[in-house]
Amino acid sequence: MTPRTRREQAAAQAELPPARRGARHQSTRIDASKRGFATTLRALEQLVGTGAQVSLHVSDLDRGHVVVSGDDYVSQPIGGLGAVAVLLEVAVQFDAGTLDPAELIDRTCVVPAPVAGIWNHLAATNFTLADVAVLAAATGDPVATNALLARVGTDAVRARLESLGLTQLAVLDGFRDNRGPDDAPDLAIGSTRETAGLFAALVNSKVVDPAVSAQVAEWLSLNQDLSLVASATGLDPFDHENDKHRILFINKTGRAEGVRAEAGVLAGPRAGVAYAITVCFDDLSIAHRLRVHDAMRTFGVELMEYVF
Image (cartoon, rainbow, N blue to C red; front, side):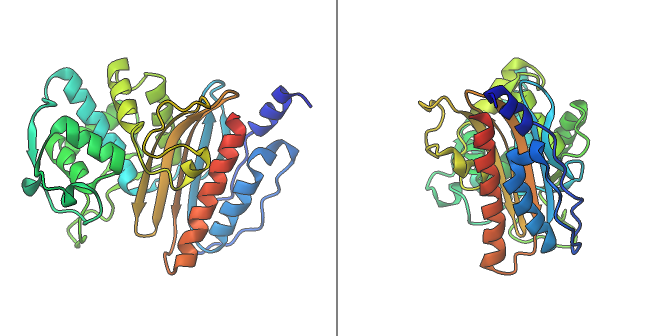
């Protein structure tokens, strides 16, 4: 079997059964042409069997076809992954000159967010918008994300996504310590099909214009959360822009109670892919959570096998 044949077989589309909370499904039959992600599919089916809602999409950047997918059209909570849409609007306004990257933002004037993150623990309460964007992209800082969203507004973010034809991706609110009955139930929602497509368009310089695409991709390349799908890359979380093994990688994760999501672009010497995965689950114990993390890491291993 030639390498090309193996790659073509790994690229054959596989389908997960529909994920519905509380529903149990028989194991999907995976034929020889779908073995590239067979272990991932089994791990995700096991999660579905416990009542989790799973959504998955992988597309080949070179060939443009879907490699593997499952319920990729369903909008689900994606937590901080929604910050990508906020960063996109910030980059557009920087490029247009309607927002000054040197404008100072005062943390004390931002809607409070959970203590997780960096800025809450820094002595400096003022940063430029450009620095706040780096904090939001590199560390997923909730206060930084809230500051950016407050500055550009949810209406502008929504209009930008609609102008790009992204109808299932939406930022509903910022991070909050507590969500009351008058607050949006989630920070952001989205489908894996659209989210993966957005990442593919970013690296292909097709989001708004090349300058905006390059700025957002540069911010995302600083992301330090490589603990889920990206753990399989072996990259240094603090310095993965110029890896000697020729891995091109950008990603963003999203976490909320009972939600784990990740999207990105991974390219190696044999192929490049855009991917997105979301798992919504009952976080009843550490075992439930670790099963989700293990499944996402298994997915990462098979992504690496595909691109290498």
